[in-house]
Length: 306
Image 1 (cartoon, rainbow, N blue to C red):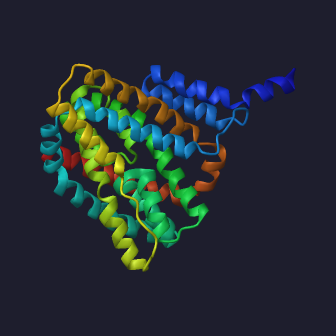
Image 2 (image 1 turned 30 degrees about the vertical axis):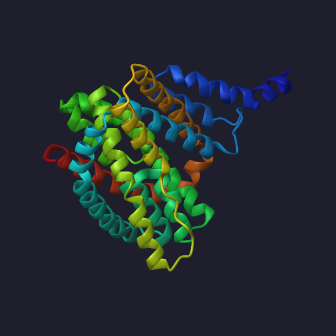
């Protein structure tokens, strides 16, 4: 009987069932459930979890585009272009100094820096290839980002209630100070204004992956090819369609996109396990926390002055 139960919990069916069920719960609870299930060895851990998470997240972002007017995207995106660039420059500079203080390997420090400054796992994946980072460095830097993402999803909504900031300011703050897009959208989804602002500005911030990857390619004389984040282009196309060919059902498509963020966050939590935490280590998490604290206050300053 015990063997049967162990085999039952290890079946892929349960993982997919939980992921689908996450559609109907809030992003915070989805992340928490993911962490709980991910921490135990009883459940099935899909080898392509990162691929599933990436596809779900990017699909959600594209569908959210159907709920946004293209003019709104241009207004918010252009408004925050220079601010995101300035924020990234400050964080990258601070990150290099912090990495030296903690005595981290240069490649590992660079991955934590780009993951914190731009777009979490996506930035790490883009830059890791051009600096020839090994699997351990990628795993540790990704682990740091995932752990801090999980904290952010619980922390930021509480701070929103405590500080009493306007929803659009809160959306800007989320976009500038939370690493991964899934956690940005999850934390900002407390109302429609903050969600729209955070999504647009976060994607503007994500675009800086491209020049930063090119910079690392030049510095490291790398021949590897960089991947353009095509889901951002699809997001813009979705918004253009909704703006110039308006139909009532687009709002339902956008709602589905919002719902898909919960399974994406469930998979983010599912990737955080005991092995990941052990690999991260004190120096790496210390580096990530120190840089994130700077990011939080810098993002808050920019949000109130943008």
